[in-house]
Image (cartoon, rainbow, N blue to C red):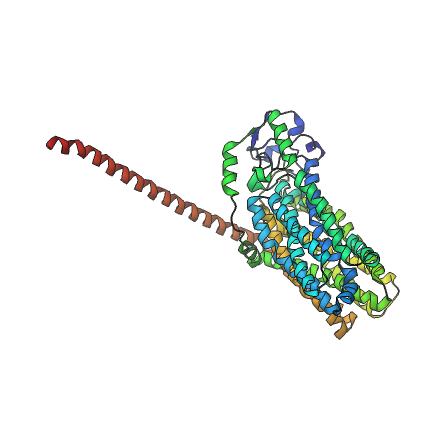
Length: 560
């Protein structure tokens, strides 16, 4: 990877003079020998250097941090908000539930918009809504206003998660996706560990309104940075990065980068630029594209598994506030500190899971004689990508389920605090890791529509998370903490056999789906060609009539 750092490879969008061996992509150690490879030279996937890719993905990851930040920062303050607004804990927990419902639905609109028009415009819309909602939340003192503005806050922040994965898909290929998706999810996993501490301190020292003042200030500062420096990456707008984006999507870094490329002799492919401009015209967002992803058999099974992993995570996080107060008599700050282990487990997973995922990908590539070349998009139609990913996810499922059961009974018997702390760390690692692996698989299956696939992921996981967060406290009160979490874990692990079905039939399902899509594309092309021919025939007919009319006119004049 280091060899790419300063010299991006030549691309379709621009013609460049070679500058030495540093520009040649080196194949992975598991790739086929050169003599066995096709003679055709494949195009580079992205013109961005490795350093640029890391900075782009890090920025997208930090943007996605605001969604879990806004959800988790609120948990330690739930008891204080309930007291100040004179409502029950169950009613305040509904503000978490509604937040998750909107968090699932909103990306359905913004994801399709970003896939066609670009990531930057989508980010601008998201942060404008989010900042306005935080201002309202910081000023309100009413339960109804809290519920409405939390929904608006969720709508603004939730799209950033789908956009982060879309950005990764724009610049990274499948062979490195595990590491980069994990890198992109750092913002997401930092939320559960850092934000509850901030929320607990603010709520205890300054009052819970300052939770929203903090979010307003932090989001405003980050939005200014993103507006100035974040480049457009959407492949339907800038291709491999060599095509300049439209003026509305242009950042300062875009201006500087394309000016430098022009000075170094890179020529923009004008034909391709015009094609992309036609593709990226503003159109009304279609949420049905997200529902199509969910309705697909393979992705539907994967999405439900992802949703269950996050539902367990949200159930534990939402229930922790009231349960640690009831069992150990904790205040807001002490409750906030109990979120550190689960967040730390998620953070460790971000730095370890991706490497294991990429290692297993290369292992299966070697077993199947599949060449792995960096910075090249490869056809995965005949590659067992489901097996490569799910062999990592399934063991994590079982570890997560076992730790959930143990956590429930430890809390039920009110044992030493060390018990729940250790189990929270294990749950954080297992649940977040399984979510990451399944998320990578979704992006692999939908490489050209990563934001839409992530929006579908968001919809399922947030709706299941909303149900779990609303149900966990009543379940614990009715069944006891031990049996409530045991039931949750049994549902979670009981679903895992469906992933074995995906491993067995995934390649076959993808082939069949690809054949159907190709058939539809051919039929559409043939219909368009037929219409074009009919139009040309009609134009030729009109021209013939005019010619005949013109030839008849002199004869008429002569006869007169």
